[in-house]
Amino acid sequence: MTTEQATYRYFKVFIPAILVYGFGSVGLTLAAENITMPPFVLYALALIPTLAMMCVFWAHWRFAGEIDEYLRLIQIKATLVGVACLLVLASGWGTLELLADAPKLQVFWLLPIFWVSHSAATAFFSKKEGVF
Amino acid sequence: MKNALKALRAERGWSQSVLGEYLDVSRQTINAIEAGRYDPSLPLAFKIARLFELQIEQIFDDGSKHATTEPQNERLRRSG
Image (cartoon, rainbow over all chains, first blue to last red; front, side, top):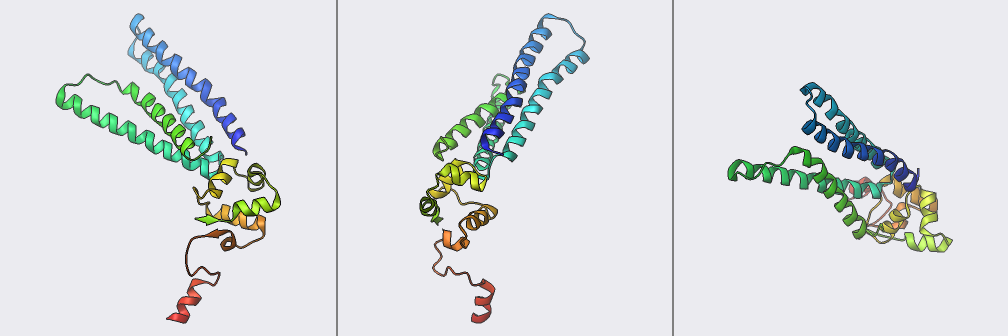
């Protein structure tokens, strides 16, 4: 399989799933604020963006397996940077919340923090390694 | 690791994309190997060697002064 085919297959899942995640999260927040619903309904609705994000990770896993070894190395490096940023920020902010009464950071933001840092790292390594 | 991939490819008049197609890897990977930014895995090194009908050592140079195709255990046995 070529890189182009793998990328096409990845975005075919990624784009719809990220849209479902975004609209699902916003929709769920608005619904929870404006409509009175029993907790189990909210839990059930929260599964929609959660499942969408699982689809994104599954597509990324498949993508990493379909590209060649050098491009896979870039993805692995970017994932490590993403995880490092996420854990450092979460742990650092958690310490501030615990000791310095810092405003509470909702765990909802952990996933966007991971994807933003992962994407930035992918762009950085791709540029550094001359991929584009 | 130094390698002769660029010279071998040029001898045959292949572009990086064409060589990538033969080896089932991307043009970017060929570019990174040629520039010495990336050392290929053993399976890919074998693929490259088979494509050019050469030994891996004839394409890749790890900088060892004692580079040889002789099995190391033979040398160790003689010296020991």
